[in-house]
Structure formats: C-alpha cells, structure tokens
Image 1 (cartoon, one colour):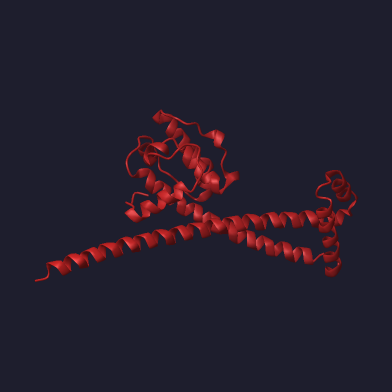
Image 2: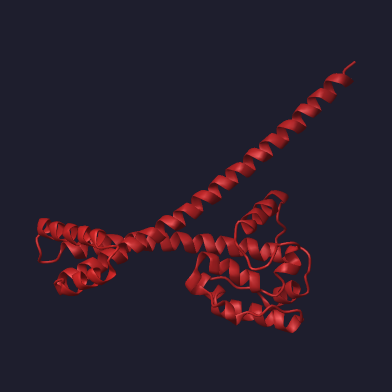
Length: 233
C-alpha cells in the first residue's frame, strides 16, 4: 500500500468515493477519513451486513482514530483479506498526505474481489436450488401449475393482507415451503443484479474517464501541431 498512485488512478479513486453516499461532506480526504468512520461507511455501502457503524465514533484524538482503524482491521477488513499496519494507521490518524489514498485504493480492490466472489457464489447457489427443487417427488408440470396458482393468488390478494394471510395459512405445508424457497431465490437474484449493476456503473465511469483523457491528449496534440506549424521556417 506504499506505492504512489498515478494522477489518473487518483482521479478514478476520488470519483469512486464521490459515488458513495457518506454521512459527512467530502472536502479533504486525508482529514475526512482520518478517524476510520467514513472508511467503515464505504464498506457498509457494498456489504451492509458486514459493518456495524455504532462501533466507530467520530474522533479528533489520535488514539481514538487508531482505535477505530484497529476495530475495522479486526472486525471488517479481515473478512476481505485486507490488513492495515499499525504504522499506516498512525499515518492516517495524523493525516499524512497520500497515505489514505493508497489504503482506499487497496480497499477498493478487495471490495471488487469480494463482490465477484459473492456473484459467483450466488450463481452456484441458484443452480443448486434449481436442482434440488426439480428433484422433489412432485411432478414438474404439477409443481408449475401449483406455483402459478399461488402467485396469481398473491397478486389478486395483494391489497388484502388478511385474506392473503389466510391464503398462505391454509396452503399445503409442502407448497408453502416451495414458495418460500422461490421467494428467497428471487431475493438472491435481485441482489446479484444490484451487484452487477454497480459493476456496470463503475465500468461506464471508467470509460468516461478514458474518453476525457483521450480528449485532453488530443487537445494537447492539436496545440503542439499548431505551434510546430507556426515555428517552421
């Protein structure tokens, strides 16, 4: 994490941070992230169940800032196979220029890797679920018909909670279990779609940054050509 980031990498990192809703305005990154609270919020944005924000208190003292980072290391970063050394924590707490950027850059890489693993695991679990459902003793066509009737009933009774509750209560336990599994599968797929959408947004942003860089280089090239043309004998 001690390597110096290029200007392009820094701009990309700042843009990534700007796209994450945080509790405090982002004005000076070394100061804003010095107590670890906003770093915890970054991870929570991508993995809500991984972070308990009440563990991290906004702080001015160096000791409390380091304490926050230590808790992050132990309770959160370890789940991402990520680690911040004590020396680096002290530098962050003291707002040493350029340190927090390298830490956030590495953290971002770990977050992206974890998101990829979650997506892959979700797809595998989906395939296992499909296989286990189709392996039940109930005939496939019969199962489809029953599920369709259940879903239609839910739609028709959506505005009538009491009637819907009665409908579910009177349902055959085996069918109720199947419906619950289907609902869980749908929720899992929705989470996968959200993760993939975040990746698409990031790629679109990277393409936009590349386009801006190309335009900038093109302008410099045109200016250079113009100057060279006027200086020719």
